[in-house]
Figure 1 (spheres, each protein chain N blue to C red):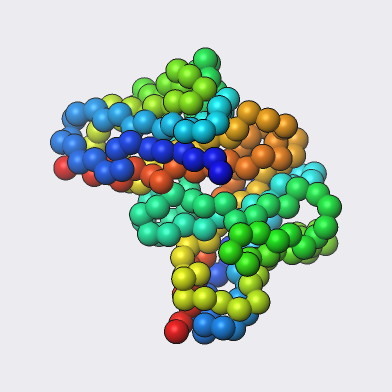
Figure 2 (cartoon, rainbow over the protein chains, first blue to last red):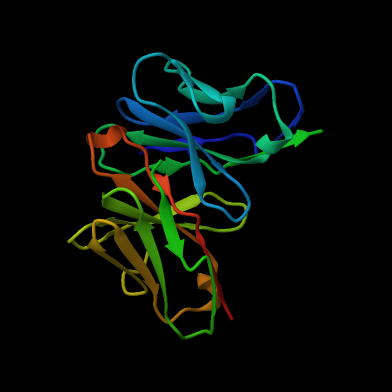
Length: 114
Length: 118
């Protein structure tokens, strides 16, 4: 069965420093991978996705993620964190052989310290 | 960009009553819509997948008779929580996948509905 793991409940980063939010996945076959961000009492906003092609994917708000097949990881990164990046981040995966079902990780709360 | 709306954003109802939540894709047609439930500080749990014109597919453990889903058109899906109880209090989020090429398109999420059952 497909699954997503976000090993960190919370990540604290000083403003201006680089940030990484970790995600590993388990799926049969080739995965479609996604990152979403959620602000308090709001729905999810799409950040980026990996379907195929370059392992480094660039997305919204300066975020990027690197697909690593050998490590089955899809870590979210940003070179310089902003206080406004503080939010809840979800990694998600969909097996390419399945229909539309997306499985979400449990989420990582990112705190950017001024 | 693709916009999904939900109505209402917040609802408080008494135990035993039913409440309907609407999910609309505002600027695209969605053959498939999804309903999720999110508990505080937890991830989204998929409740059901709704295809226009056909019966919804429920995830294991989700009561079909309690959470009625109707996908009457390509832009509207509704979730009705019947005979609500306090344990049904949660944040309900819908998403919609635009008509288009295969599985590569991402889902667009609504802003969520906070349901409180007293």
